[in-house]
Amino acid sequence: MKLINAILLLTLFFVGCKTDEIALKALDAIPETKYYSSDIIPEQQSNIYGVWKVVRTSGGFAGSGYTKDFDYLILKKNGIFGIVRNDSLLTSGKLTLLPDLTMSPVNKGIHCKFESEKKVRVELCGDSEKYIQLVGKDSLDLIAPCCDRYNTHLIRKK
Image (tube, rainbow, N blue to C red; front, top):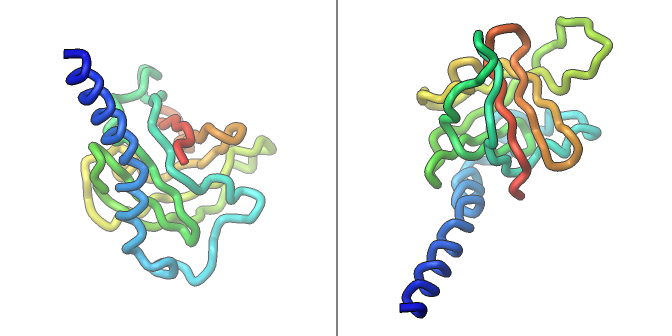
């Protein structure tokens, strides 16, 4: 019985570790220059690239966020992103940089729009204008530019 439990535990461990690989391979099919011929993100902010796991949400009218509707966000050079849920790539698309119109002296991050190739029922695709804020090396926040909208908080996976 202990042997069966050990085998099941190891199987779950190895299957659970494949999410990053599946997601990254799905985005490998997208040509690097599909949207832009060179990288649009300033070099000093290129640490946003990688696989990010959704840990919580916030904002909205009551401030309590929404039920998370995807598991991972993948950000790659040249404005490519992917949204993964249940080990499947739901959609991918391009980031479009937007001007920061707030004129705030506080650095809010990279103001952009997530333009999805395929319509999916994901909050980030419905309210696609966000500030990408890197917090330290391993946390990323997608912050809505205005009140009563949602924010998504992520941690680095790869």
